[in-house]
Length: 60
Image 1 (cartoon, rainbow, N blue to C red):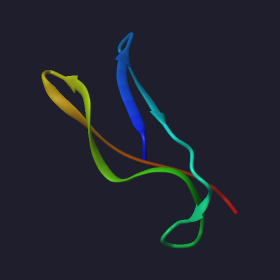
Image 2 (image 1 turned 60 degrees about the vertical axis):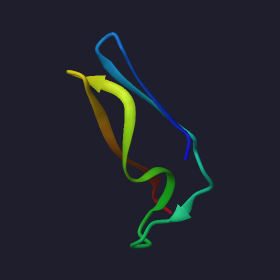
Image 3 (image 1 turned 30 degrees about the vertical axis):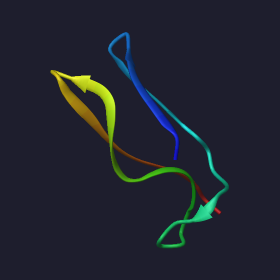
């Protein structure tokens, strides 16, 4: 998973690579991008790193 995170004009901008759709754990959706849990980023608010948990999916 390659993800970049930055703050631009007071907006959190997340860029993550798309992957080949794979079934989710439940099998109800196809995951196209995921952090596979929480990921600590280099972006900060009040001197503390932002942590992101991201799942992007499609319906089969």
